[in-house]
Length: 78
Image 1 (cartoon, rainbow, N blue to C red):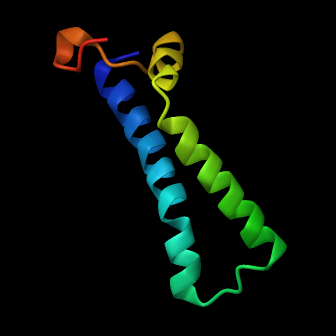
Image 2 (cartoon, helix red, strand yellow):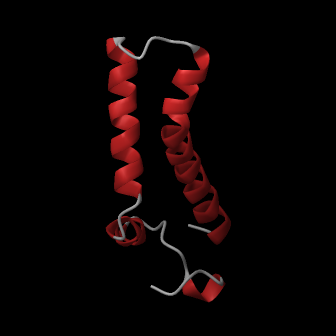
């Protein structure tokens, strides 16, 4: 996989996490009742995803599937 493709996939993944983190604020601002079952489920998934992405082991997993940062390209050292 080319370095450009790796950067693109990592950006997509990071954008999904950013949306997951922002979801509670989006729900609050939209006025949707947070007691709806699908909203509660979405918030639980968003919180879980944000927590998982904060783990150092996630970078190791990304390395295994070919989406890790390449040190030769200016990425942070492992």
